[in-house]
Image (tube, rainbow over all chains, first blue to last red; front, side):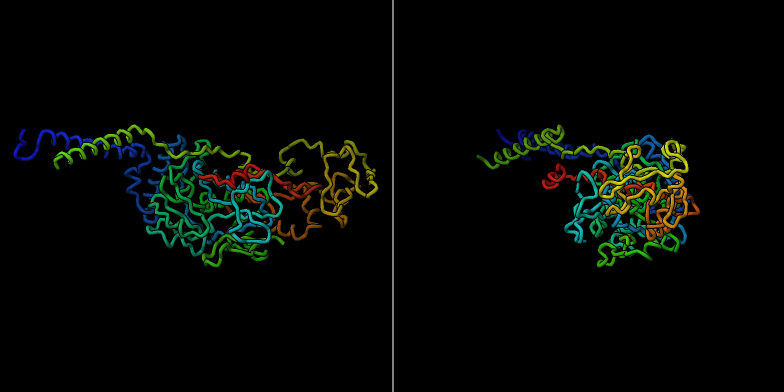
Length: 307
Length: 212
């Protein structure tokens, strides 16, 4: 048998076609996981402007769109607002280490209020258990699980976003998706976040949490009172963190963790008001620590002791 | 074997491997997704914002059964009850009041009902300076001994807060002493903690601790 002059025999043609076909099949198969990508942003989401550039009319449209999205997903119509900082208000948090019993009610009240993912879990508050007489974070344990709290020989130190005056997370954000507002709350525009997680690496308090998967929130536990910069449901691939419950505090209410604390260890208020509890505490109590104050982050979250 | 033949064999093997891989990807055969653990929803008791107990003032507000506070259903008016003590001079709590646990203060310091209750009128309280205080106004009595705590409570630094921090927007919800503290045994009893964070990869030492 003699090959045709152009060098393409019947056999080599069949072989190359088989290889090409399998190659295409393999390529198609490797793209198969894309079929499971259901949380793809819509055109409106994709083209939405930066929070600070939205005009009030555009904001209104965006809020209605978010309400529609939530309704489509959960079958419940939420009330989403865009709340601005109040004039003459700077929020400060004070936590009484003498009182805290480590019951973790704040953790779960926060999850319920702020629509955090239940599985996998995202929790803004971590309660550390430390042996008496030490503030060595190396000795801290947050997986403690005794029958009863408080335990002898330990004290408890809940840690959440410290709402720093000099926030390292804001400095590293390459797209300005997170910033500090006039009332001291560092917020995130979830639609502007690109999910690079630089902020999580920069935060010395482990306060920022990333949605590695699509968050799962059971419909019956969805909190329908939502804010754009606060507790509206997040998407996969964005960062989230404690925002002092902006949907509550910017309408004058206390955060969920303050209301649920059974021993009154958590105190919150406007530091610019000399009559507020936090002003009284910072004036009269042994306010011993801003956590890791040597880092110069200058938290608005203070730990104090009674007596 | 000619060069052309070798190339052909390699191509054929590649084709077979690609095809098998393609089949595997599409069918998902042998792919094990990372096991997701089942995390049950937290018990709603941990989301409850209620106080440890209910004060007399709260019971009045709720129009609850107040028969426990009707002293003169059993006691006789104008006849102060007589207290009995054992050999160690410890108060013997009568059977009718056996739900009362006398654990206010250490070293048996509070060993007398009439440190707080008014013996002349059992429906009232009495401060150490002789002032008579209504049950619903009990913080005044507590404050007559616990001065610094009373001062903190008045400033909002002791005790639970709820409602509105901004007084112009709404009322602040405060609790009185006996909403949380049992006056006869004020130390708040230990309680069960809410579940801790679920680790993605359980650590042996943690699992051991969780089970003990």
